[in-house]
Image 1 (tube, helix red, strand yellow):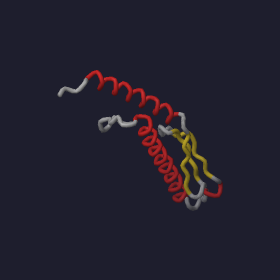
Image 2: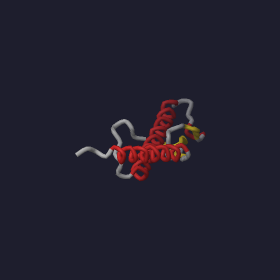
Image 3: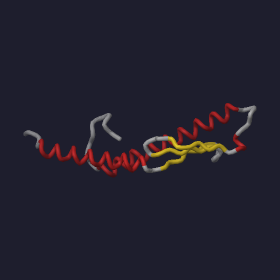
Image 4: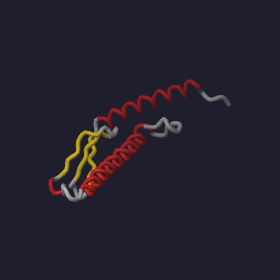
Length: 106
């Protein structure tokens, strides 16, 4: 039985529209990652465009720069993890049952 190419093309067009919508929503969503109980926070969009880094004065110890560097790195990783989770969640909701080949996801 031959696949219905017309139907397949319609599904692909719908998937493309869904992807574009999700990408736009992610680009307009602000995510905050933090470390050290909020001593360091970073903000990025859902598409991982980083916008800001904030460091509380008490996190700065000139004699222990390594800890501050670790806190910044942990805050960035936290934001990336949240952005990835949001991307996966929105992709599932918007695309529904449409399965995209590996590497073509959001």
